[in-house]
Image (cartoon, rainbow, N blue to C red; front, side, top):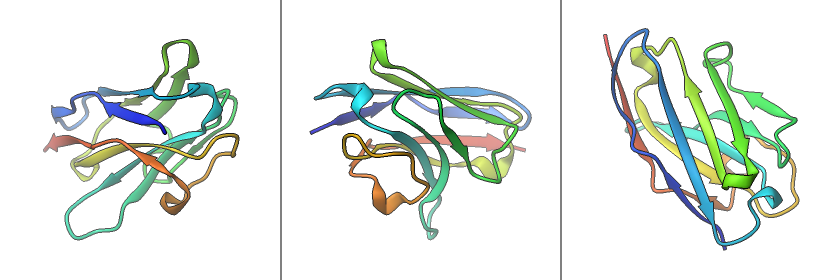
Length: 125
């Protein structure tokens, strides 16, 4: 089992920045590829970013490329999402997720087994 806890999101003005973190516990953090997804009411959960177990492979959703950066610190059991140049359309609940052990990165939310509780990010115009 893996437990995931996201940091508090927040309210930020358009053009601003915010960093989210996700702390994992329960097993060896470096065993799991990780990802961030986001969701707004009435919509499907959207892929944001994914990162491999060692951090050498990263994938980005088209809407966040060039603005968001994912990283991880396996010694601290933590994954980070640095969000820059935020836009009102980035407003969503952001979820941290982990795949089963030893699997590669994925953009599909159905391929993630463990999820955090979600944290609200609101970008005002």
